Image 1 (tube, rainbow, N blue to C red):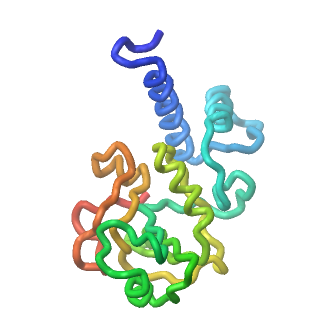
Image 2: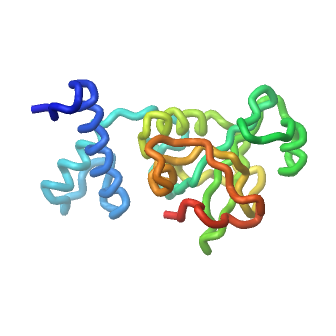
Image 3: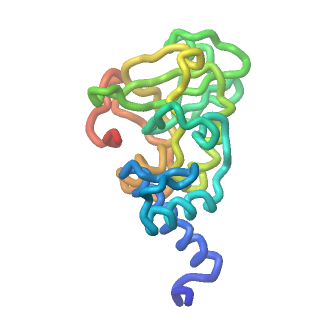
Length: 202
């Protein structure tokens, strides 16, 4: 029976949110699979795996549903750069941002993934295409915690220390900072450090 303080649509969204939390925990523990259940899977694991398969999300290139060979990449957030759509909070023009990053101001724009190096330092990855990134942002806008596969070397234009900000926070980063939905967040002034208040890796 739905909670009396929630409408039926709100109750259904609440149940979906709880189901996603269960799937996220299973993924973090390392046994979740969208493929066929392994022979040693318990009844609980099989039920959670089937729940994950049934939960709807926007598919995008590199979401891991077809290619399981590469590891998933945890992201702190994303910045999409386009000539006609510079993120709110960035005072530079599109050509100026590209010059600072060291990339060409091409018409189709760039996708920048903010993540962490193996030692925990903040890292920006500039990608050649933005199609998969747009699909990822569609999921985040609904609070769906999905992450992309690590990019192929051919997809990476350059990698730099520090994060490009303001960025759209991943659901995990938003949650750790006490924000329910992804939000625009600006890092401290020093671009080479992540600083206090930065979402922790992992």
